[in-house]
Length: 301
Image (cartoon, rainbow, N blue to C red; front, side):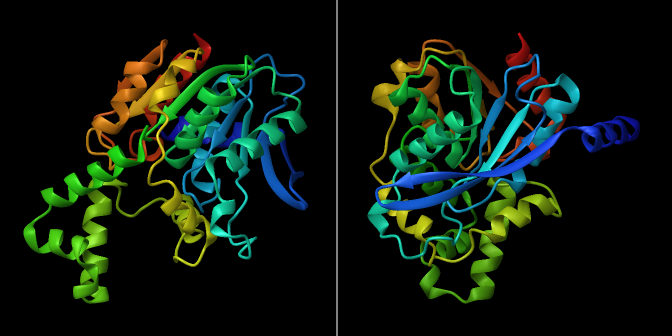
């Protein structure tokens, strides 16, 4: 294991890495999407994989384990930071929509010249607008879709969170349901226990994950205002429009429980479903060997 890790690290050091920004015009405003590419988009024999990070309001850093797809299989991997991230606090709540993020993705694909031939991986929130993008934009250039630890309906997701909270010991469940009645110390303890059960079962949590989470702390960010707008969101009725082969990844103890995942499998015509038993919400950290074996098999078959 140590030698494999050392080899992967050395290969990554020698991998071509490109960073840049692309203008994203929305109405009269110009936003800037920062991206990072591991691999060579022009000369690679492999189709590039574009990754969509979670949130809303996080950044790409916790998705860095996917660089492994390049070091092991030569698949160019595109990361980018979705707009937001404290950059535009003056934007009204109605500005932050799923369509906005679909448009930003489309704009990036055009800029990089890969819109006619690419694979797409969305994790958590990234899977929300990734599935929406695939089902509503219906681009023939999308060849493979990976939906990892995500949900098909906001209502089903909320029902899952409520279910998991009900499974906690009564005193912890009460803290989660009525945080205003408890101290910060009590709330932090309940959150830690819940998160270790349903978000990440590692101790300590990976540094890159903590880095991304630092961007999403606090309810003052515009992305958090968007969460209220997601309350009625559902992609279920249009999933039949997803025609490319799709890989669905879930975990039995994920906060995004099985009922909010199953509609993907039921409604996407070419869908393979893999449940990673040893993880919760972050299999790229909790069981990387299983996770990347599944991804590589799907992307190279």
